[in-house]
Length: 185
Image (cartoon, rainbow, N blue to C red; front, side):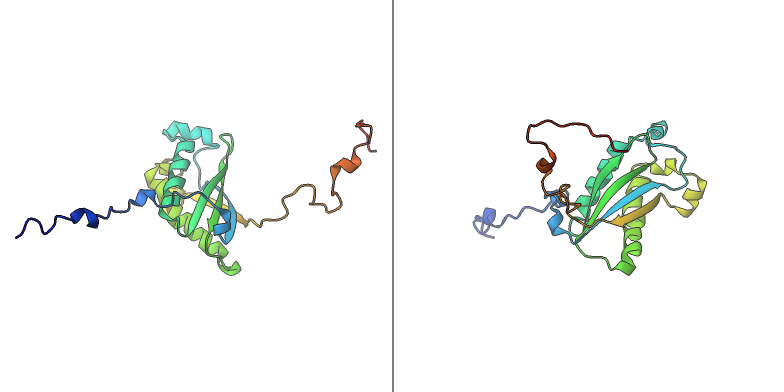
């Protein structure tokens, strides 16, 4: 075989796409057609609040961020999850779920349950060791989360125009720049 046959091989090199790099684009809500606010708590919980999870060698903050990052990388073409609230003294956390496809009203419950029970539970349950946080009833049914959700509808987010009666707050400030406290009875 002629050694010069592959002499221009460098023109044909295509680097493999790393799966971990997919989904790194920044979150843009305009790219998603529906958004939901989900509240998740532990089903049949052995803890009363998140700070008790340290008894089971679980760092809740790190654990949730790891799972959400992996979820967003893996499912970036369909869904995006974002942590909105996590208080160590409460027993729930709040996530925002954004979907590129719109769920039908009748199918919302089933679709969100599928995402939570099938796509999100296993990384927490096995990957992060959250099986330690549930009791025997939860282990038998292999259920980790209790979930409630509400569709997030972007409304008029300008606080001055919510009432539609207030257009300009400066109308209520006297011209001499003196603000007085008025007590209503």
